[in-house]
Image 1: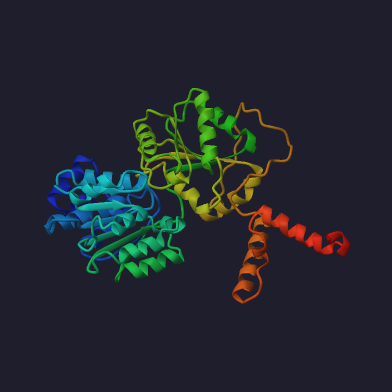
Image 2: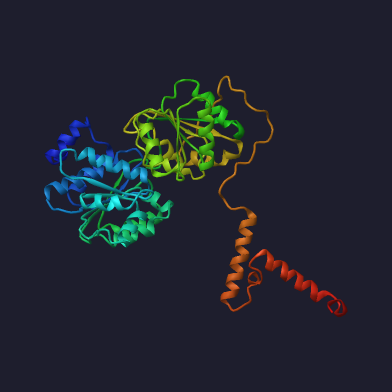
Length: 439
């Protein structure tokens, strides 16, 4: 099948040829005809399958065949990077049309966004900043006739689904809606039932797996040696464009500093970086001006960079599904790539969960020439999970709250700060003293 078989508007056909797209991907082949026929679509496909173009082309086709001014399309995405990627796809696919896309995201000045939306026909937005605009009455969404909710499972992970539900109520009820997700968990199904009307479901085989072009390798190595191990890997010269994932922002900064000290061109991407810093890092990585981009899971979705040769899991992800999205940054659009995972002994259980999800066992290898540490016990990897002491404290507070609602005295109300606690102790000590001593 070719794109000509879809009978898209001639302006879109010219853009497809200019982009050298020859055959549609499976998600595009199944989704585009349904969307062009006016159906709501519920799409489930693995990352890197080309679903952005699968909803952008029908949206533009509908607008070109039904001329009307004003804001007509809305795409909701979970991250700023994904918003920029979708807007770029709209620009490329609509290069021979008059339609423009405006990006509404946090981390930048809100006033230029208001002006950009008035001149755009398609709005690509993250939920939080879009709600800010609606509260300020910068614009309205009643005229929107095409709604897309992209990466719905990631929306749920980031706590955006209540915001998404509120935004759906602001859009025209006669709209056409498409929802895309890598997985369909119960929360995603609930929002799909709320947003879609008689949807046509599109399932691409093995949505829980990784792309066929990705070769996966596991390197057992102690936590304290991971930075040196990565440097040894980079010295091989085969790793031309590398995306490295860490578990925390602090580790991302520290690893980037270590790589820079060893004369590697490196960038950093995480939520503590300003939007300008994030944009500069992404642009430099796309232009191959930097060899290594160190990032947290904020880059696990929405990063579409051509020819990323390697993805390195410096830290094994705590959530098995995040592994699929991380390694999906390579081997995109039926390409090939390598996914390397550095595993400490304390991360063995996490690896087993990932292997169960992707339904394969990772080959374990050693790196020739690397001096491994001795057999001393592996250090425990710190995670963001609450400790037993924190959980016990939460339970005590909950019990106290329940007692307060029942009319009982809350023991936590006795002391609000260290000085009050000290006074309470002194009062109790005074009561225990003989009467003569108190006088």
